Length: 401
Ligand code: 3PG
Image (cartoon, rainbow, N blue to C red; front, side, top):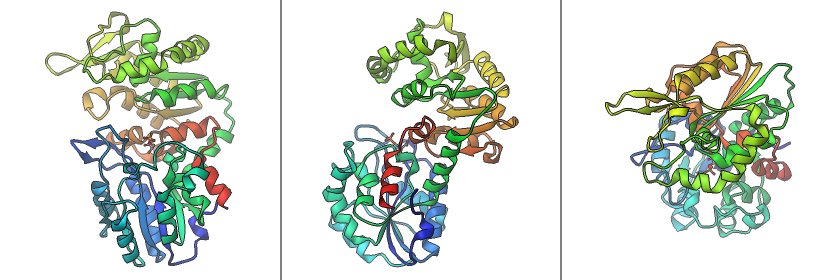
């Protein structure tokens, strides 16, 4: 077990790692539940008289979501109802000067950690603890707080380096997510357990299907991952029609695994029977998977699939959702995601909805968080926790204690 912010002495200088990795539209970061949750932790720390310097990442180099944290500081300021300084530097002279100016009750946001070379390549915590990044910032603070549960599966400098060289504590988000997600793994269900898997991250979802063993009775697939499985099942889908090569890469990287998983777990995997796309007049149109055409971009599961998945959810004792079934940000293609979430909200099943983006659909379509057992702000970390895989970021906090 780890220490939490309840164990902090008052009025400390704190380095607080949060995870507000968020969707970015036209270069503008979009508010999401992570901001609200982390703002609660930060507000509590400020009330206790601490001075807070925030570390966070956004996107990955090479992606268009890889932007500075200037917008994030503004969104945090809105949630906190107070000024949040943005510092366009992570551990250089400008950052150190700003950090040294911090006073009790102040909060600043340092630059995107992934803009630092030492942050990203996964390495052992011992290696990360030796980076300039960690060695430069650590002496400036009394303690490190990790609130970034949703990034706790990444062995990156800002997540695993600091707990080895200074006092380290779990923030509120880290604490509640960890507690809820461990309870899921420890609980036994008599009835059917259903997992709804979608979204874009095949590399995250495939190992889950393989490692979740007997815990899950059936998987309802959608999103890009669902399309890749449909393609492995012999349907003409999962191709790049927009020239981004996104599907091509996923297919090249995961084809063999997907084919193997499909043959080994086929009886537990449910694939879409129809898909939805935008027709020439800009309307939502649907097509049965047997009639699918290679040069169309599919944006949601079809209505028959949505109905079928929703029915299965209603028969389940527990449902875990990770990833959206379609591009729900566009109302026309929200049918699959919203129908399944609504079915869960209407029943008494034990339910966990995870995935930064997916959880956003809950608020966007008028569903209440209280209608679910737990709405996680985590994606990859949540599914890893579910399968019993250790989270390195949690492990180092435990070691620090
Ligand atoms: C997330 O958004 O799930 C976490 O911030 C981790 O981001 P990553 O998948 O880019 O490492």
